[in-house]
Length: 127
Image (tube, rainbow, N blue to C red; front, side, top):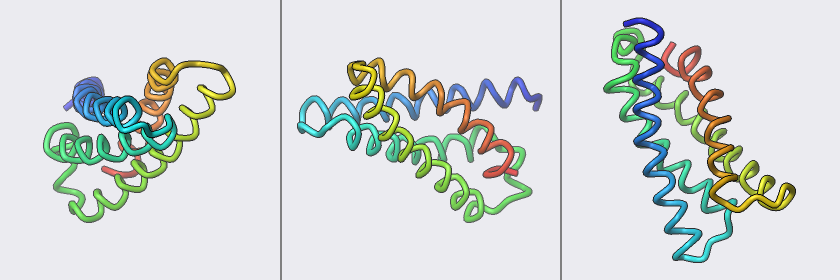
C-alpha cells in the first residue's frame, strides 16, 4: 500500500470517527447542557475508540503483522488521550479567547489534531 493510499484510508476512518465525535459533542453540549470543553473531550475520547478499530482493521492492516493489538492499542490510546486533552483545551480556548462558537472552534481543532494524529500514529502507534 502506498503512502497516499494509507493517508486516504486514515482520512476515511477519521471521518467516521469524527462523525461519532461530533454527535457526542452535540448531544452533550446541546442537549445535556455540558460546557464546550468537556463535551469536546468526551466526544474525542469516544471517537478515538472508533478510530482505533478502523485503523487496526482498515488503515494500517499491513502493519498488524509487526505489532500486537495490545501494543498498538496502548500507544493509540496515548495519542487519543493527548488529543482528547488538546481537544478540550483548544476548543475552550478558541471559544473563550477568540470568541468562536463551539462548532467553528471544533472544526479548526479537528483539522489541526488530524494532522498531528496521523503523524504520531503512522510513526509511533502502528510502527
